[in-house]
Length: 109
Image (cartoon, rainbow, N blue to C red; front, side):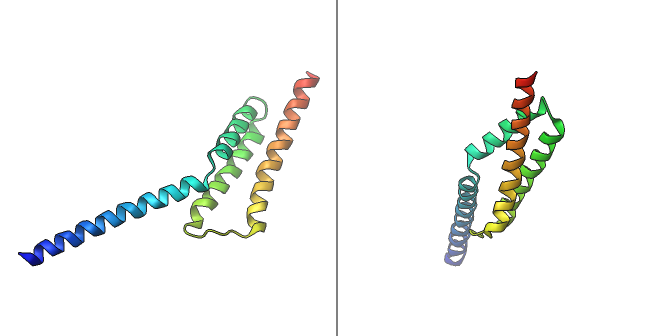
């Protein structure tokens, strides 16, 4: 009987550790994905949808690539600067260019 009780206690402890691990991973993921960045990117895409659907689609694909890269990294905390900057440059550069085009079109119209 004592053997069964020890087995159950170890099983319960292992289950608690598993839950804590999942919670820690979710917390780390939330900290990696800066909500302000995500909301700003989605807001920019939403604005572009009204004026330049192709540019909005391209930005959405780039945002998706960035999020995918973040999730695929897993436990890796460091990403080569060249890789990270390439993704950010594409996403931010395209967003800025598209929004400049939008504001230029709005001021000329």
